Amino acid sequence: MEPSTQKLIHTFGALADLGQEIAGTGDFSEMVRTSMHLLLGTLALRRGAVAECSGPGPLKCVALWGLGDKMFEGFEIDEAEQQAFLAGDARESLVKNTSSTNNFINRHREKFASEGIELVLPMIVRGEVTGLVLLGGKASGEEFSNDDFETIRAMVRHIGVGIHTHRLLEQVAQRAEENRRLYEELRAIYRDTVRAFAAAIDIKDKYTQGHSERVGKYSEIIAREMGWTEDEVEGIQIAGYLHDIGKLIVDRDIINAPYNIDAKNSSELNRHPSAGYEILAPINHPYADIPLMAKYHHERLDGRGYPDGLTDEQIPMGAKIVSLADSFDAMTTDRPYRRRRSFEDVVHDLRQNSGKQFDPKVVAAFARAILKEVNGDTRERRIVKMLGKGYLEGDQVATLLTDLITDLENSHKKAQKAQN
Ligand SMILES: [Fe+2]
Image 1 (cartoon, rainbow, N blue to C red):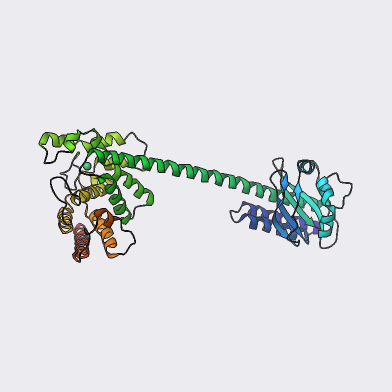
Image 2 (tube, protein in one colour; image 1 turned 45 degrees about the vertical axis):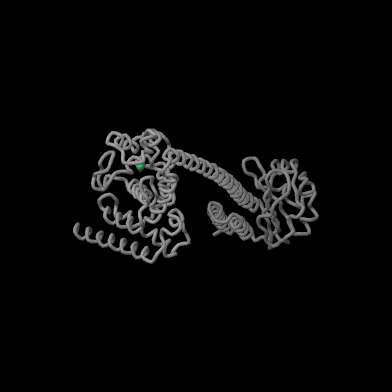
């Protein structure tokens, strides 16, 4: 094989490697360093450097080989010098060419000579100088040939494109970051609006202050315990806040009736899940199924709930969670006509109604979450705080919860066996 052919093959190989380096998504300065090493290796050059610039101004060193660290200290390039680079050819880039019209090289000729720099080439992408490549002489002491210039030009162009691409990617990342921040802000606004709504709903019902907010929080805790994703958890929290929004259109006197209401008023009150759905459905929520969770939060597994009398599998899991959170808060807060129930009583109710009113999986998850707080397995004290001082204290609380969880799991296993 002719030596020149061999060299051509070698150069092509180096170019291919360079292309791969530049296309790689790894560390940017590592990419430039590797590219420069390939360039130096291909032509057997002793030293070299790559500096980046964006417009006129200081040059920023990206890679350096065989040169002092302070190579680029105080190096600046002005508009006219950039234009000269855009207009000039590779031979213009020879430092020893004293007839060069390139003022940048003329200005720094002495420094380049003392550092052993023989070539200064611009990286030009889309008519702009993105930086400079500085190269020392060949280890053999030979002059640069025309072929060498061809190779150098091609490889420098590759590196230039790499830097340009990196900049574009950085801009894209910046935009994405800005968008993310905007989106976060919008989400925060949405959440605040929802909380304001929740407060408005609860104000209408003077006996259940803070009910919607607590249902939101209980729902969130249960969903997290059930392994829902953070987005889904956030969604169900919102659904909890808004589950009673339909009450906004129910007569205030009916909501606030201190004793059991008659059939007519009861059916008026029972309109609130469907009314809530009507209010929420036209809104574009960032989370799925919020309107359905509101609509079905009074459905029961046994089909005796309302508005549609759905049964187990027909009820969305989110609605089942909100339903339990809602009932739990109703049982554990004082009402005008009754004191709240003891925790023992509440656990008894959950056990009795699992499989009838509540989904046993949801009840078990809630019980596990409460037990974690009671046992101190988590640093969270959210449920304990919502229930107030003294409510979850006493030796029997953990036992009640453990027994409930075990019983629910056992009956779940039994049901599975029966199915198989
Ligand atoms: Fe409700």
